[in-house]
Length: 236
Figure (tube, rainbow, N blue to C red):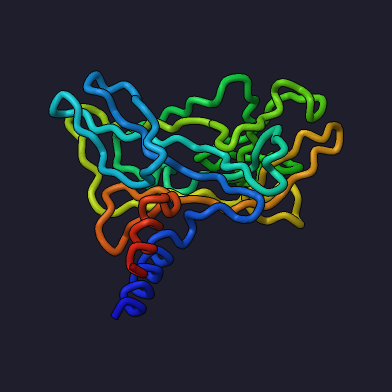
């Protein structure tokens, strides 16, 4: 019985966190941001990648997400930026009247658009879904080389016009590779190292966020220590 219970718990964890765990060299993850009573963005909940939109003043709907680079493996030595795209927030994905605001991390240069297609390419006529979020660094010792385990890349705030506070149904927001990627041999979300002037990059996994989650549509930002403690407790 205990072995079956352990297997069931491990299977549940695996299914609920399919794209949530960082790859060997890190990940780009999405976390929920609380909405304050005055409709401003509040604290980041690093244990949540799903939520419902918050209704403020009875008529205004709002939700916010924070995008972070989770650094491990080769990216733990430091990054100068990231390349990715946030899918699921284009105009066709949101009800009429909903607007978006992107607040980038302090000191970054954003080339492209993080969550909307834009025109580019050699003739300026290609549809590009890609953003490059970059700090200007001149090497690994540069103070702008990001060496924290979680590096803030930016926050996206979405809100309704008054009178349209509800988004119906389950909505998935995902971190994807830039389309097309800046390097055709690296079709994946990427973190860029601080090794000026080469600026090598490494593929990482992309997280997801679920608005209006409903089982089995759940996500996870990783298995917390207390969860593993519960699994280990089954052996006793």
